[in-house]
Image 1 (tube, helix red, strand yellow):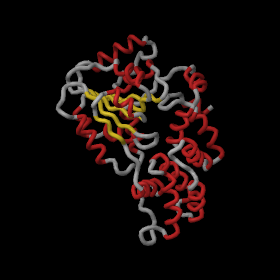
Image 2 (tube, helix red, strand yellow):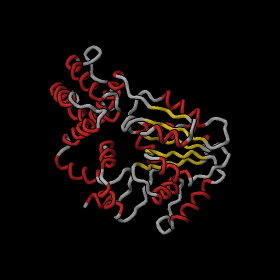
Image 3 (cartoon, helix red, strand yellow):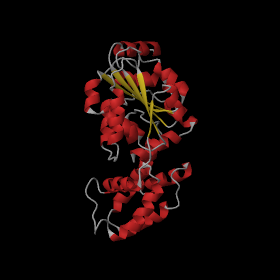
Image 4 (cartoon, one colour):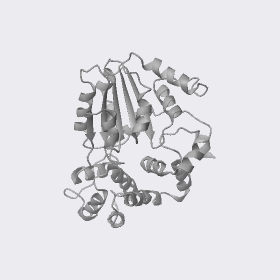
Length: 321
């Protein structure tokens, strides 16, 4: 459900964003603890090698500021991979300060500064401070410390250039880890730097992820290697996901409602077989399938949540009302 909300917030048009951003400002804390908790709840497969590669690059014995990038299409697992690296025990021990900043399509200087400060424990006086004061506070907090800055979901080079100005360039082994859908953004961040292209899942890993999500980490009930009735619909569902973890997780959420029903699996397989997840319309159709299987009384609240930008902090009373 959270993944569908994330996609909906990305697709929101500019007029909706203006309306939302005119509401009373609240601190959006996309922090190490909050983000790690969210992503640790997700079950992912096949990322151990990627984590090791990126971790080793981040802790190289190089004093000059370095940038490592994770690139891939939306829903491929970039944020999940970055979070696994961010929460790695060796990374936590190596870096004195770790900061997580979510940018997305709309760059908001003030919101970014508040995210940075909130993630390193500064929570008082942020709303009253000017942008210049916030910028100065960031420099004072990060200056001289070996830090890891994660810039999640950066869309364009202009926003990246503005964001990099916030961070000191001390020769102390600090690193920036960014995720983006666009290779040109990653290359702009550090010409010649490591750009890790995250590939799609193969059919075996797609099925492994689907099964883990549907059955909540328990073993998939089997007759032989798989339930005999599930082989054909299983292959149709896995094929329709095109190796995209986002699609696998969304469909797993639908299937988990009637996990042992042959009829339900066949129904979902037939509905997804015509979708082309790699294209925008197909992905929207897949996400819409998740929404359509929500109980009617949850849809209104769900759509309300979907109206907020990604990682936006808001008062829960708004939702209750």
